[in-house]
Amino acid sequence: MVDCCSAPGLMPMNQAKETLLASIQPINDSEIITLSECDGRICAADIVSPINVPAHNNSAMDGYALCADFSQQAEIVKGTKFKLVGTAMAGQPYSGELLPGQCIRIMTGAVVPTSANTVEMQENITVSGNNVTTNQALKIARHIRLAGEDIASGGPVFSAGHKFTSIDIGLLASLGVNAINVWRKPVIAVFSTGDELKTANETLTLGDIYESNRHVLIAMLKRLHVDVIDLGIIADNKDKIREAFLTANAKADAVVSSGGVSVGDADYTKEILEELGNIAFWKIAMKPGKPFAFGKLDNSVFFGLPGNPVSATVTFHQLAVPAIKKMSGQAIAPSLQLKAKTTDNIKKRSGRMDFQRGLAFTQNNELTVTPLTHQGSGVLSSMSQANCYIILPQAHNGCLAGETVTIELFDHIIG
Ligand code: AMP
Ligand code: MG
Image (cartoon, rainbow, N blue to C red; front, top):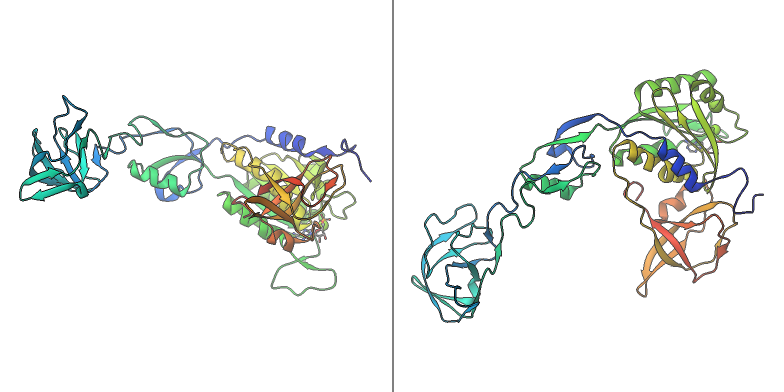
């Protein structure tokens, strides 16, 4: 039993992550897509604004745009009279020239005439025929949204590496941009290995289980906006495994398999990989998920996940997802870790970094976390009830209820 933080033979989690990320090359092909296709895609070239946003000075209120004389005073007393000479609506500007002492009725978003120097809201104005009287002192440049105040023409909008969100699509639409240069999606091939694995339409015989890892992984990959090739379940048969790897390598930028990477496995994954590529079999000081294989086939990179469903999910999420993000050209944001008070004692032996599953919530204005009861690496149901990882460093020895622990909320890839 390994019980020391320098766990001999185990690679620290951060070292595994750094080694893996350092050997990933971002995909270098880009393509032009339309706005409606760009949700979740990665920007391949910096975007600058082709226009000012807003394009013109416009009114922030329904009211009156006035051409007042501020040359001698910062405020113009209430009761000042103006001549009403026209109207400006959004999309229908006032076409005349606004002269000193004149005003127009103006609606929110309508162009403010060049000579108007302030907008007063309608509540502060009395109108009688063509005569407009102010009910309170006027101040200069009120309620005018200035051209370019949101984004200036030629100003930076998005940098290469940015992942487009739904809001970004709105922003691009508001700039009149419809053709966007993005990195090509990586192609990821996925398969599961194991003679015991069956699909939903098959009958289980003694020792069989319904296969789940591939389904979890494909769902996560879809949220990463990559193209997925599902190669199904591959039996523990040397020729079939070789064939699966050759097919995957020919078609994909990355290959993800689960099962068959533990020491003492009865299957042939390790043997075939040693024949086909340059693969390292790591024992990572993390729990769940100690065995993990990573390396290069001749056309792709390979992630070999442990078979246990929670181990497969956590290692994929913590190690392979950042690597796939890098491959996609995405700028990698630092992870957001928070401090929470645990409601229960947490058991842990030092030696591995734990990613326990927890349920975080706010109680008495304090971020609080309850570790889920079943932390076994095969217990997917507890992971399904969780909304965060409780991350306990390698040397951590467990703690008591009421102590503070580090948590990482599940992101949109697994949440
Ligand atoms: P292995 O890493 O192949 O030794 O598998 C470890 C455990 O995970 C075994 O109990 C397997 O039956 C289980 N397992 C392996 N692959 C899958 C899978 N794709 N879905 C669900 N369980 C799996
Ligand atoms: Mg197996």
